[in-house]
Image 1 (cartoon, rainbow, N blue to C red):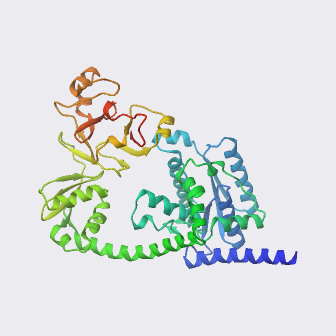
Image 2: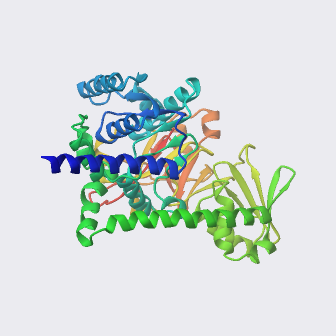
Image 3: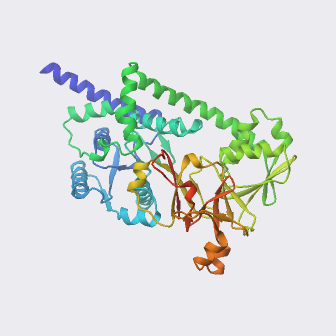
Length: 456
């Protein structure tokens, strides 16, 4: 029994010492500062609250009730309130009308909850004079984020995992694995709430957690520690890269009145100029595919225009000109949609996602939603105004129809005609945006991947 208590005490001391050392080494906060802990009631956030209490740090607790899990949401709320009473710290608790918010914003449940909670946390921080907001993300969360970004395609910033600090947001639990937290919870007999959605494979993160990471652990002992060391190495490399990139931007980006310009000759002489051009233009929301087209146009016909959601870019052999673009679009304006576009706000606010046939069957649909067989599309897609002579094959109909006849039949008013936008693939109309998709690009039983576009 004595040996058991000795081992238990050593484990506890190591955990607390590691926690305090991580905070000190990363300079996350000073002992006298006030920290707002975000506590869901789950294992990770309860372990964080316990460690803050044992370390003697000054803190309060904030809890969000998103009212998404019926009775369990309110049981979580009561449990967290009892934790605040146990630690004798202030409690901030709020119930959100999450479903109303996501319907209004037309976003996912995850995105709605994220927007609501972080906006509220920051509101509390500022109004109640907290120095930092602490979340309970741990090392396994960072590893999962690494794999998510790796699969989506990302640059170096997407591979460094979750950072210990970003502005007023700190993550003091990143030094622990999920296994360490579970052991700490068990040995200290700490109660916590279980969110059953974390055991489901509905979300990509859960699939990685339940299926991919266990395979890594069986391939080689210490494989995940290797991934975490790689993320730390990438953070250090990123710091060097950012310093170098800052100097390239300083050398190449010039302000001329309301324009930002890039000297093409100077760009050509810059090492790794393709990468540099992408980094320069990504700040103006140009995607990688569009930047490739811009790069090709520098050596081609001058005067080509490219649009991002916020800027217009004009090329020549001598200079690239970038300007904020708020002027009215002409009848001949065109906007590119690449295969990695997720959202545009000009000329219309559209959100793009790839979904499966299973997801398609469960989604609520309206005239503002369009679905296409991804394999039938040729990127980049182009958004443009309608023109005389345009025709398409209206969904559910045989044969083609002139767009002018379609608008007459639908009794379009003059403003509706003037503001009618089309989405095209390889010069073929696939969607009269907000009204009707094209029969030729519809989903069939052979469809594997679906492009879902929502007009907001």
